[in-house]
Amino acid sequence: MTIAVCDDSPLDREAIILLLHNYFSDKSISYEIIEFQNGANLLYEIDAKKHFDLIFLDTYMKNLPGIDTARRLRKIGYGGDIVFAAESSGFALEGYEVGASAYLLKPHSKEKFFAAMDRILERRRVDTYNIIRRGNIICIPYNEILYIESNNSKCTVHRTDEREYVVYKRLGEIEEELSDRRFLRCHQSYIVNMSFIVRADKEFVLSTGDVILIRQRSLNEIKREYFNYINERGGNVGDTGKLCP
Image (tube, rainbow, N blue to C red; front, side):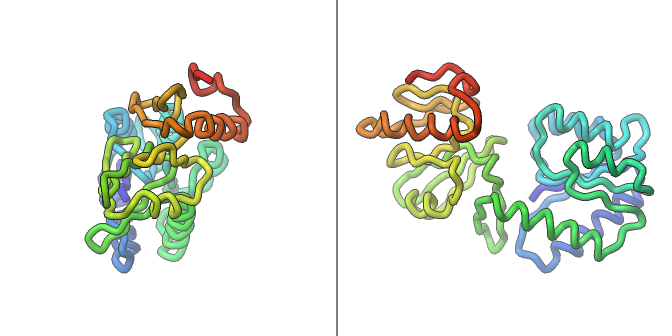
């Protein structure tokens, strides 16, 4: 889990980081914390494809306040969790408008901080695929899994930020673990996240340009499954690009 702590006060950043260290000390979850003293630097890193699962934002930063930073984050497509750290509840409504996961008042209460983290992690576990690596748990949100590729007895999970994870399981086992409608077993070697498909012909083309093979003997059935998924989402074929029936 990669966490950004963005606050122009070194002492306030230190307080959040200490609480995070205490929170994760007894949990088998790998984590990384990166500090930012202003929103502009944070936005630059995200624009450069740096991924963060969770971002802490101070509401009263100079030049670019936390609320404005959050609005820009959502505008550029950041879909992770945002937690505001504030000296008052004055921006609570704005926090709700940008989909904040929590709004915490300074000085931080350990109990409220830990409770907020519990809610965030619990929600992430519901919609994540978890990989155990060196005794730690890597939680990959479903909406960040592009596709899973099989190679004999191991599989590679491809993530939207271009990270890849090798899992020593057969694809059929992973298929059973991915209890979500968006994932389609379209080939003996591939499971695809249908949310990222932009073209369906004799193969699937993803928004990233990746090409996913379709089992040809079941071509029409697999494509029909994809079109049904699009309809269930309330969209239509045109919403995902030019599709070939």
